[in-house]
Image (cartoon, rainbow, N blue to C red; front, side, top):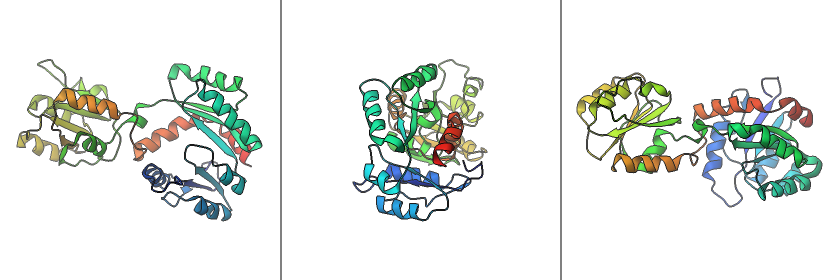
Length: 289
């Protein structure tokens, strides 16, 4: 919309319950979107009303899960419903919510759907009488953790803080079991964290040559100083974490983290923008005009 010349403001509504860390994270990301303006902090309902009264541009507000009916009425807002679950009974609840919104509803966006199910999901929404604006596939990068989040969940100490410690990694790789690791194995993926035991110097160096975002050393013991010297001389330099648990335990914890991470960092923003190119912007703009 901004690229089409519209003046766009972005806002994130926080929960009425009080502190809302995910909303604050979202608001900070909104402030980095090129061509749009944003305060960079989550708003209360009253602050959203004040923001809307300013006029002169299109205000897009992300609201918490649920139906903020009173705010919608006060703002005379048009609404886009976003859903993950498109199976019954959740789909029936979605149709009911859409019906309650009446003319205020623009349409529905389904997110985090399997690639092979995109067309069937769109058809299912249409069968329920819902205006499907887009079906967005699930994405590993959007689900991925940053090195800083990995450090927190693994209770790991940071030996080196790299240049991309707040950017998501799409893949977490375990070093190969073969005697000759080589670089081709680690070149399979771009944005990655590599997990190996602290004393596997050959694997660390092979991984380092492929520009990982993060090296996770398991076993809780200090690695060779030579490795840290090589890391600090790398460009870009990766984050190096020392995890206290075994490699198997570490991988298990990391696997459970995927899909529970914050929406933060430039990489996730760029990927989200790419995915939302599937959105029917013409239909959306016509509804807002």
